[in-house]
Length: 318
Image (cartoon, rainbow, N blue to C red):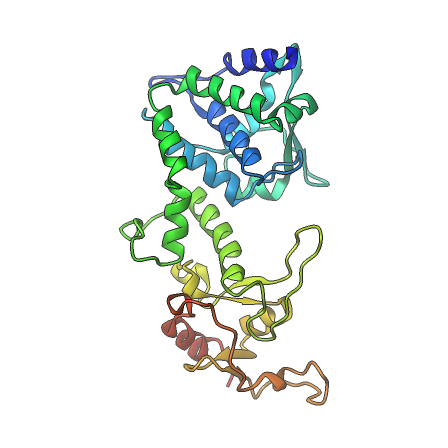
């Protein structure tokens, strides 16, 4: 109980930078985001990775709670929360990648993800946030202290599964009611989130299998060895919808990107005549020629014909 009260006091007295729009809301948004990810079982041990679900949830909460003109920036509180203290001790820490240091605010979320291995909480706070009663209490402290005017907006959106992440997912899946078609330019954080969602959604649509070989490989550590592969490179079109993607194991991914494999307009595998290999080997790529790829269950998630046509004409060596 003493630990809960000291953190409740600390959460209600966060040091927030002053601006012409009022005190910055970044730190309480990050704490609410951490609480939500623990509550949903997305963060299951005391290591918080810089990935799409974290950055996307932060942005979703920002859009639901912040009505001032403050600039939304995930990287700011991720670094500066380290300065907060409870009884003279910090409660948020960053673990750099081996050989790296984090001595200043890194403003690019992509660079941050490449340098920071994970963030983690003080052990007593981690234990509190894994207790549903304590977690709910601290969440309420944050909402009542900093967002009393908009907290009902957030609670209603969460209850109905609405918000930024749902909209981004719907757009990548090209669902009929997707709300983002009018957006032509995304921020770096948007691109980071959408790329992370693409990497998660595409293998899921293909039942976590390589669509060429049917291979499915994962580990007890939740690592998957099935890649989400862009058909037309994202750098060319900024198209990250799932219809511009297929699920491939790493060796098929490499062969596809280098034009040794492609897909015809009947979703059958093409093998380049320029491929040199032992055709008698049990894993020879030529054995795949003419085989139909594994397809998603819904036709609207099939690889786009125009993307496949581009790959055949611009990449495939034939």
